[in-house]
Image (cartoon, rainbow over all chains, first blue to last red; front, top):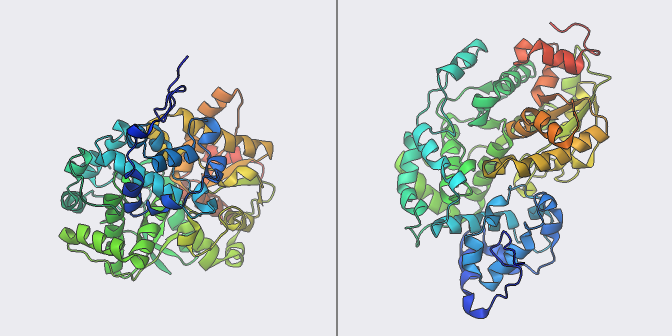
Length: 184
Length: 292
């Protein structure tokens, strides 16, 4: 039986050269934070220390880096896999090649968004921030509790957040329509 | 010592007691945590989507503090991480600095590099110190075994935190627990990730990750768990019974924020620390004779 793992790789699939985008690794390396990927020598320390991988063998950091270095762009950017990094920095601390894997994973996620593959569950954070300036609304309810504890009232103002998002052209970026800018 | 208190998004919505206790304990030790209304989200929740915007939001908040001329004290590990990382990169990477300055330019603010960001637990450990805290204890928590849970961004990436504590073998939380008279519980899972940042992608993985930590606490016979991040508390505290049901066990490990257990040792009432009397009795009933 053929099974597809979370990298979109089928168990009996052979990746052939014509599917590969040889420029992909340089695209990742151009993102600030992504540059370390070219230093990876595939030791697997990242995979060994990953607390997510402990519970899901499909989440194999070394493998996603290898697929990236090979140039399996579509597979990497459309997989669920890149979104499962919890940014714990365990691998970042231990990597003998200073790949800065957590930053590389973030670069891959950002590239996925740039190519129109933002994860629906994560995407929702943007409109919330635009509306409140925080990741949630502080209502009268919360402010009453705050007052009871002698804390100051929180009046939310998203204006500056919106100005930054506009300058960034974030709306276009999120729709996968902004390909040539950014990368910090 | 004056700091601007950066509460972020999660603390005001889910952990008011943490904020209340931090202010009380800070004041008792000469650390004034001052309110700041203009702060917005630190940007961490959108790192996954767009690091440019995420870092720009962090720098916006740093600028707001710079204009007040005060350092930032944080309560949430993720806020600490995002703000500290942004400040570090503004200082060390020119390309990054130019890009972010451009993104925040419409807000009228400009980064100057004049302030620092510190987690409140780090302030207690580094700037106040164990001796000063011990001298303030009126109700020792001796007899209680407390498991510290560090979370991730309080310690890592270590290069942005000036090496104030070891990323794999930290001791700052143990030092603070010892100051209350309680015994810190040693367990190998203490620096593992709770999975909170990927909760939006499904509960199963974070629950598994947190179960591993709770199992470690239980194995080493912890009475109480103490956290320094509201996300760790969501997983260790709010999810604990659900994780227990799944694992077929009852952990029964009450979870507190660090300033809350310090505050109890300083003689504050549960109410003054944003806690319920029942909660404190359950965790420290045998030790604290009178819980008012």
